[in-house]
Amino acid sequence: MGNQVTSLIRSDRSLNWQDQLSDLITDPEELLSLLLLDPETCPYSLEALSQFPLKAPRPFVERIERGNWHDPLLKQIWPAQEEQSKTESFVADPLDEQNFNPVPGLLHKYQGRVLLTAAPHCAIHCRYCFRRHFDYQANSPSRKQWDSAFSYIAEDSSIEEVILSGGDPLALSDRQFHWLMQQLAGIEHLTTVRIHTRLPIVIPKRVTAELLQCLSESRLRIVMVVHCNHARELDPAVADGFSALDAIGVTMLNQSVVLKDVNDNSEALINLNKALFAHNVLPYYLHMPDQVAGTEHFMVSDQHAKALIKTLHATLPGYLVPRLVRENPGERGKTRIA
Ligand code: SF4
Image (tube, rainbow, N blue to C red):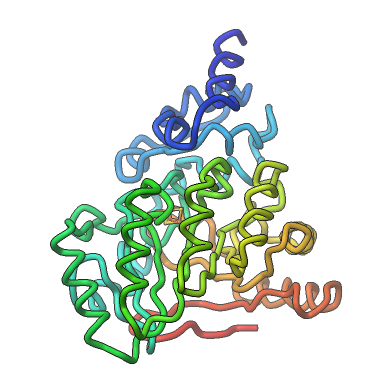
């Protein structure tokens, strides 16, 4: 117990976000010990760990209920034995993204928008991630290669929006992020930068004064899509970060994935969307999980997901009901299911 307390204290208030980012929990045994769970009854897969290592920030782990093996936050990060299940239709690149990759680090899949994989890593490894097999090293541009990406965007005036995506763009330092934002602001026809991130949730201290200043000074419209799957991910520190972002005019949206044993019930989704709204965030998408190798145990049927949305419509105002969507390989947009 002494060690557990010491370990948790290391996530304390005196550490900055980068200290917390370099002090992730990567050992399942340590995680079980912190959560007061018995390793004998909590199996994990060494094969899954070697393919996609455990990465869990301590501020996120603090929100997991001690002694609860079924905790919905734990399920999102646990390298379960079920990841070893090998069904042919579950593949490494279910969205065929490599075919939309004209220069390293840039995906051009959608009309008017390009996606930059801005950072080669994330603060947390979400086991359901559709990019868990993505080769970030091969797609992690040097400054010189960034120039190719910026030239590609500059030469196509139909591109209005740049989406900064995972790896988590806010895993960049404030200095690197500021540089990236300045380069984008210099491309005249761009109007909007959309930041897909989980960092303000998993390490709330990532919302630094420097980040706020960088975002508030940009001439570009900033949209931030946080990826929150369960209301318990939102604690007062997360709420403070969201409020600060909202106060400088960032449009705050949420995108969730409907995940078996995490949020595949109407109560969890109602609570999530109410909690997000209380923290100035509007629901945007509820994604069906992609058929990624190692994630089959998270799958939810279309029928069940549609029934959940129906219940949400009957319970919540329309603006709190996310669009249920799926991405299909080769298609240039999301397919709306409900
Ligand atoms: S933060 Fe996003 S990109 Fe990173 S592992 Fe989680 S879902 Fe995937």
